Image 1 (cartoon, rainbow, N blue to C red):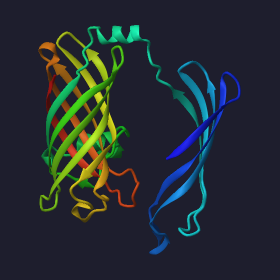
Image 2: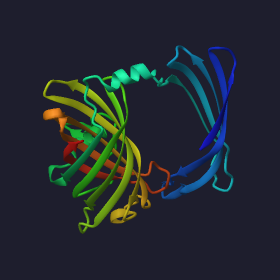
Image 3: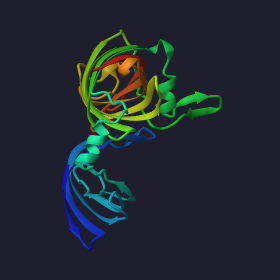
Image 4: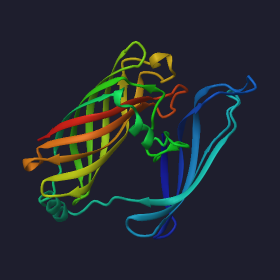
Length: 291
């Protein structure tokens, strides 16, 4: 968490300075059974700076640097990072354009209620593919690296999900917020675990036809409370964690009242803690109702 101050150099160029507090997590490792570094988890000061050049009203070229001082108590050297990239800034449209968007013929559900079920009996091939860890022939890591798997593989999973629209573009993109309750069984002794989550949802409409709308969605870092920690004696972390999901689905029927979706899920704490082996939820078959 940090605060930033911008300083304008000219109409197109600006400089910023940043200061705050960072959470540092370090994982232990050994060489020839000799511990080189132990686990470490502590708070640190953070400093940063950067330059931005405005290419247009929406696009900026940016160069950024971040520095964290060394910690003698934790035997941790200083950490620094530098990056160069582009930034895209969303612009608020005027009231007339927003009204035209709101009254056009493209469907965006205001509310969705969904029920999902998944079972490990069909395997974790989809999870592995999107986590780039699917074994195919001589390939040990076949797939696309856009998601995560997890050391703990749930046996069964059942979810109740509610989502509500908070932003939409003219045709392609929407942003929802949601809340869910998920029940899953851990693979050892079928231990029962409940997950209570709130989360954002990015939805992109890939194909619109007279009878249906086809989309993909992606959700990251949804704050979650699990009823168990370190599931199956695996270092999945404490009860506070995050939920991630991705899927493909359609809205169909008269007035697009119905919804069907395939999705995968993952729970982990993003290395905020030194225990973060993660939990994989098998692909879920989802039915929904819009209103």
